[in-house]
Amino acid sequence: MELMEKSRMQPMVRRADGITEARMGQLLDGFGSLRAGVIGDVCLDAYWVADLTRSTLSRETPHYTLPIVDERYSPGAAGNVAANLADLGCGKVMVCSVVGDDWRGELLKGLLAARGIETSYLITDRDWMTPAYCKPIRTGLQNVQQEDARLDFQNFGPLPKALAEKLGEMLDAMAMQCDIIAVTDQLPFGVIGDGIRVKLAEWAAKGKIVMVDSRERIGLYRGVIVKPNEVEASGWLREEATARTPEEWADLARRLSGEVQGVCCMTLGSEGAIWVEGDNCVFVPTRPVPPPIDIVGAGDAFAAASLCALGAGGTGPEAAALAHCASSVVIRKIGTTGTASPDEIRSVHAG
Image 1 (tube, rainbow, N blue to C red):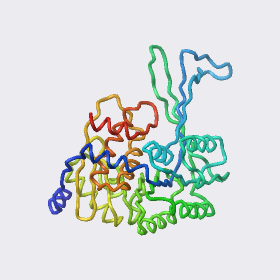
Image 2 (cartoon, rainbow, N blue to C red):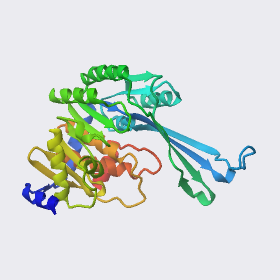
Image 3 (spheres, rainbow, N blue to C red):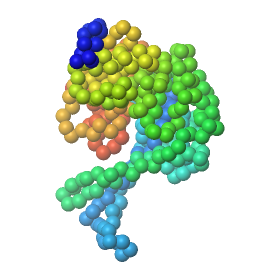
């Protein structure tokens, strides 16, 4: 009741009319001139496919084996945002983070470089572990598939002070070369700390377009564009993430925008997004995508596409509308951390 009363006191939420094909084309054509930087938690996404028809009983333990017949790797988290920026056609994409001196770090750097992503701002250190999400997939008769519990490599302590200071220096060096900066603050113990957040606010004040995606710390940022989903925003504001009307979700987005003293773009899954910028509040709906779908990477695609659209001169609602199309492309790609190209985005919008 209290939330609804607050919502009635706020200005009405305007519903976006969408984006025309011509305007989308103008924005997509502008991506090629953008210099994009990414800072945050880079991860390795691994898919290990086990064919259980080939399984045998182990001689050493009373367990049947998981015979791996296929393995696929791709950049994850901030690495996937960088991959999306590259596939969107940005003129230059750079990534700034810390990886470990381990097999996952070497593989991840190679995957990024293969996509044309600059890794000179990527620090390698033996005091840090390269995060990875490893997904075993069991296959059986008639091509039945089932995903096992994910195996995670991650750090369980904060980034050492010396590494944090070095990362700040790398961020400054990268930011000087950027038009737009994407931030992925995903892991409980990741690379983004207070010092990096201060620097991001400073670069935003200098005119860089900075967009932040953070699972648990979205309200700690200042003067940037924050892009939480409804669960992340609700968690930070200590509200239940229950179903609400666009007007009620807009109240949360306004509160978060005021707290961070910046723009808030709150995504609402298959419903759309709320864009709050100053006194303007706009609901940008999206079109439903029929199953089967795989939502892995949808948020990364939205962040990359909306940031590019802003960099190309789009308004907030235009950026969100274009980003919805990018996410619609990605969730149709099953069993992989996908990306969206300009041609794929045009095709989805036209359909």
